[in-house]
Image 1 (tube, helix red, strand yellow):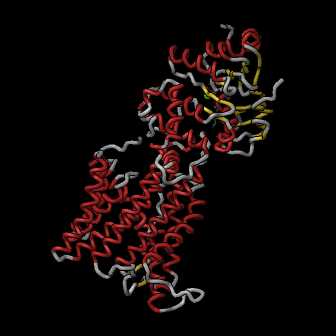
Image 2 (cartoon, rainbow over the protein chains, first blue to last red; image 1 turned 135 degrees about the vertical axis):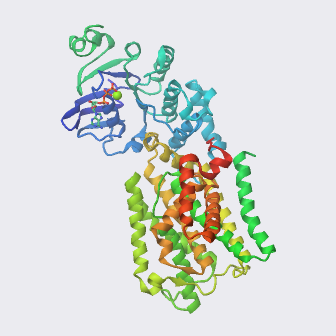
Length: 249
Length: 323
Ligand SMILES: Nc1ncnc2c1ncn2[C@@H]1O[C@H](COP(=O)(O)OP(=O)(O)OP(=O)(O)O)[C@@H](O)[C@H]1O
Ligand SMILES: [Mg+2]
C-alpha cells in the first residue's frame, strides 16, 4: 500500500463536556477521494479545522507528507501543501475574484514581502490566477468583488483559491453546500478529475456526489468514526444504516 | 483619469496653491496654516498604513508623532548648545539627518510595541497601543533633562541644504514634498504584494492564513512602517512650532490623527490629506469664532460617521474600488 499523504492518529478534541473529536484515526492515500460523512454536529468541520491548523487538538497526531505538523500554525501547514475550503465561504470580500486568487498565487510563490511592484500589472500573478478562474468557470466574473458574487460563485471561487495553492492535499468542507443540482453535478465532475492532482478529504452532505466520487467513505457520529470502507461497504453497513442513514438508504 | 485621481489632483493643487496665494498677498500666517495641514496629513498618511490598509486601530500613534518631535528637539538643542549628546556627538540641525533619526527611532520603538500589541485584536489592541503611548507620555513629562512638562524649544529652525527654512514658504514646500513622498510610499505599498497581504489581513485574517500567509508578520511590518512615517511628520511639526512638548505624545493627539483619517476616508490615498485640510480649516474658522470649536468638529465627525462612512473622499470620489 502506498504511503498515506495525510495520516491522523487518535485525535481528540473536547469543547467542555462535548467530545467533538473522540479518538479519530484516518488516512488519505495518494490519488483518492476520501469522503467524510455524518449527521449535523458530528464533528466533521471540527476535524477539518484541526487538520488545517485553525483549531488545536487536545491530543493525537497529524502527519502530512510523512511529517508531524502538530507544531505548525495554519499558514505553515498551508505552505507545506494543505489547501482547504471553508464550509461557509471565507474570502476577501472587497477584493475581486481575480485578486482573491492572485493572493493565493502570491502566497504559493512565497513572496509577500515585496513592497514596490504593483500586483495588478504583474503577469506572474494575474496569468496563473486567471487560469484558475477559467478552470472553475469563473473567468467571466474575474473583476467582480467577492462580496457581490452569488453564493454558488463564491463556492467556485473557494475552489479556485485552493487550486491556486497547488496543494499536495485538498480539504474541502461541504463544497457543494447550497449550490443547486446543476452546480453540484458540475463540481462532482470537476472533483472527479481533481483527485489526479492531489488527494481530497471531502466533507459533504450530498450523498449522490459522495457515492459517485468517493474511493473510501468514513462515517463520523458523535466524534467517532463508526465505519470506513467503499461506497458499497458503507451502504450495507448495519451500524451506519442505523446511526446515520436512518434505514432509508 | 478616474474621478478619484481627479479629486486627488485637485486636493494636492489646492494645498499648494493656498500658501502660494498667501505669499503673493503677503499673508504668511496662512502659509503656516497650510504647513500645519500638510504635516498633520503626513502623520495621518503614516497611520493610514496601519489603520486604513491593515485595519489596525492604533490609539497610540501620538507616541511616534511625539518621538519624532523630540528627536528633532533634542538633536537641534544639542547642536545649538554644542553640547555632546553621547560619545562626543553634538546632535545636528540638519533636517535630513533629523528625519532619518526620527524614522529609525520610531521604527525601533514600534517593533516591540507592535510585537506585543498585535497579539491582541479589536478593542484590546486599541487599549494596549494607548497604554504604550501613555507610558511614553509620562516618561517625557517626568524627564527634566529635556523640559519635562514644559517642553523643549527649538531656538532656530533646523536647516535643509540650499533652502532658507526660516522663511514660511520654503519650509512649507519641504513639508509638502515630504507629504507627496509619503503619499507615493502609501500608493506603492498598497498596490504591492505586501499591500495585498495587508489588506487581506484586514478583510479576513483566517483566509490569509489558509493560503499560507501568516498575518502577524505582515501586520507588524505595516505597524513599523506606519510609525516611521508618522515620526518624520512629528519632526516637521516640532520644526514648524519650534517647540516640542509632551502634548505631542498625548492621547488627544492620537485621537486627532484617527479623526483626520475618519474625516477624510480611511484606506484612501488622499483621505488623510482631505481630513487634515478640513480639520485645520474648521480649527481656524470656527476656532476664531468660538472656543468650543471642538464641539462643532464633533458634530462634523458625527455626520461623517452616520451619513458618509467613506469620509470626504467617499463623498467626492465615490466608493473605493479594488482592481
Ligand atoms: N468552538 C466551539 N465551541 C464549542 N462547541 C463547538 C465549537 N465548534 C463546534 N462545536 C460543537 O462541536 C460539535 C461538532 O461541530 P462541527 O461543526 O464540527 O459539526 P459538523 O459535523 O461539521 O456539522 P455540520 O454538518 O452541521 O457542518 C457540535 O456540537 C458543535 O456545536
Ligand atoms: Mg460542518
